[in-house]
Image (tube, one colour):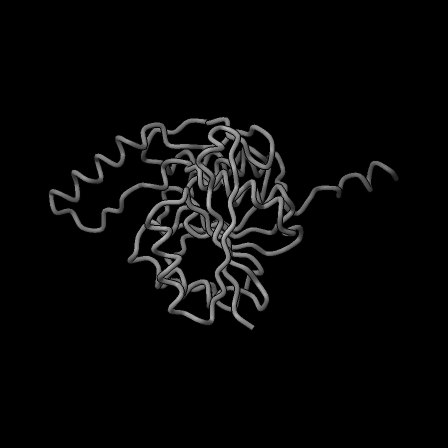
Length: 245
């Protein structure tokens, strides 16, 4: 009797061994670049995160292809786990996301989204291109976690009828051209009373985003800082956006 009841104790955010094996095989076979496991501090513990082995080389290759006139080549900034993701991870200790639906945009290697899952959130992890999502699936499989992982281009794609109390984005304000699309997607998918949490390492472009968003009075902008243990003198900025009531 007791053994039967213990069979159904799996968390909805956890996967079975069979699921992990299947996902790892499929995702690793889909990769077109070298990758490795990188011990990363996520939700307060060192955990393995799948990462590209040569992000600098991948960026140089993308630049070369762009210079040669190849169309549709996107700079692979997703190949590196940026400090902004670590800052957003740490900031999640300050908000109640347990049991809440969370949308991560521009997830890259998935650090922030995985941090949200480990804190009990139900997470949809997205990026504008497919390559980083293979890494995300590998990490989720290795960690025994579940998430909805899909391509989602800001301002172009739509998650029909889906609303999220939280939308996360780390280092997604680095390009001015993306700001209108980011705001459009946030407005469409943020639940009533929800909050958008964006992080960046206090770049000048982030200051410009803060000034730019003032032209949209429907959004309330607040700013906080998170210190990281490795370089506390260079804190991460957290941009908190909510709709004006």
